[in-house]
Amino acid sequence: MKALVLFALSVATLGAQQAQNPSPMVEHTRAHPRLKEEAPAGRREALEVGTLFMPGGLKKTAPLLIHFHGGGWIAEIAAARAGGTAAISLQLGSGSGAYAKPFADPQLFLRLVAEAEAKSGITFAPITLSGWSAGYGAIREILKVPANYARVDRVLLIDGFHTGYVGGAPGKGPGQESVIEADGLQIFLQFARDAVAGRKRMVITHSEIFPGTFASTTECTDWLLAQLALPRKAVLRWGPMGLQQLSDASSGRFRLVGFAGNTAPDHVDQLHALPDLLKWLK
Image 1: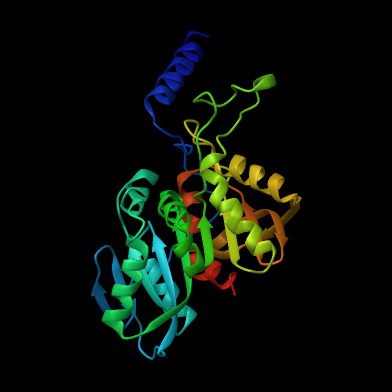
Image 2: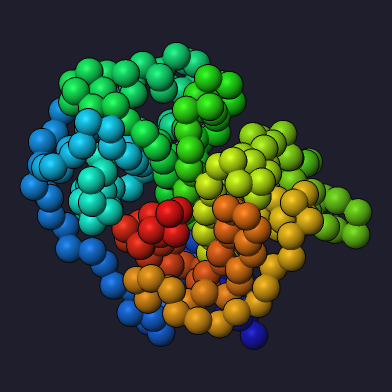
């Protein structure tokens, strides 16, 4: 009994020390395959922020993927596999704030696109924004600017869609229910509604990770679906990169997919699925 009490105290202490907690364990049921790191053939140009990748054979007007967070080589592989697509990858640090801060400058996004077009001699359209994990912070700031919003055609959020809790912690609402701060999600709701109406395209994926110090992707997507009046459909099927799909919700050009897993490898699985997830936006 004494050993059990000591174990419980050690777990509580560990939890108090961690800023967030995808489970520290690693599960071995799923294979967690990974893309092979490589540099696809093509030309690269350094930009004010990020790197522009241009595979050979791009037309004078070409699609552009702008990806935030995770290895830049993954975005390049995704663009190369998509065919006829350029990519800008940005690695700006840890936490959504590191991605949000630069794009608090309302001119940065259009300046970045203009620089990419000038250095490539290509007009980029349609433009897709994708963000894994903390990368959603940049996308949120970009979409808040009407001129940016008009230029963006597609959004892909990969297990990165968060906000804070009312009261600063989970379980502070009536009946110990968690209440999330919706203000930071409103621009995503606007884009989702436009996707449902067929004016934009949007895909959101999420895991079962519960960070604890801020609202999980499950809680935030539950809120989003409630605003859209869209039900989740329970499914059980294999997804890309060995992911196990548990739920699906879609309407018009909007789709939201839930995957199993609450560990760090489950989170990374979704990043490595980027080349496949990008196809869902077509």
